[in-house]
Length: 299
Image 1: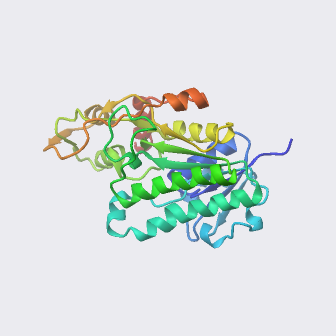
Image 2 (image 1 turned 90 degrees about the vertical axis):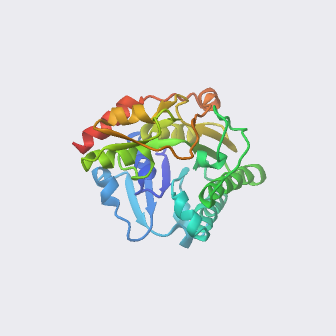
Image 3 (image 1 turned 60 degrees about the horizontal axis):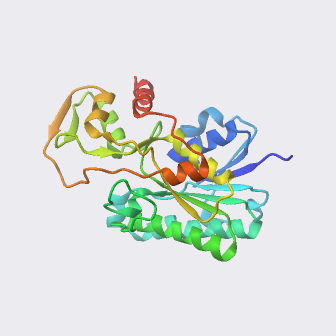
């Protein structure tokens, strides 16, 4: 049996780099694609010498769907995109190109080369302010261009599955975190302040809860989706176990400063029963363990 080959777009980023590492550990050949000028060394340094890894610095949109670059690929993990919802309010147009047109390019490549599955990490942001625990059939109500483009990415995946028979699976990731993640979000924000010796600022009394999920659990789900017989499906990707922001701050450690509350959902919580039932997935890393790993990396 020939070795499985997976293409990871956005491979030098947070989620992409962890996906590359996990696929290599499972014995896949991996083609890691990211933009020209990107440093693969920063996030993929430890695996760059792996003979099963090929790094490619090219703009995905410069590669035609029928190009031989995609020949021999079994799975595509499309981790590329622009993630910043705040910036999307200022300059929305680039998000259409990066978060929608690029998905179509990947799907057309999959159609042209009979690729088995395209895995698309979406975002819980597609729900807007949602009723918890949020199921996949909850109304979609994106409240910024970033969220809108992630939903549009899901829709084109579903369409290409239904109309063209392209294998796809999408995941609405909730509060993902882990090594190499961006500073945005409460985990990155608290760790940055801890490293700077500053108090961890918690809004209100910190009782608001979020559904934090560690990156290795995210990647496990992505791979399970790729290898499954499911297609055209979308799954919530979270733990289904709410944790308070105050508890998160306590796990990070250090002085905590409470500041006035701001408008924000009191609870963000996913229903992950569909993911568990259909893909046999379970989260393995508790918030306490995940934060301990990240704090250890900083010390």
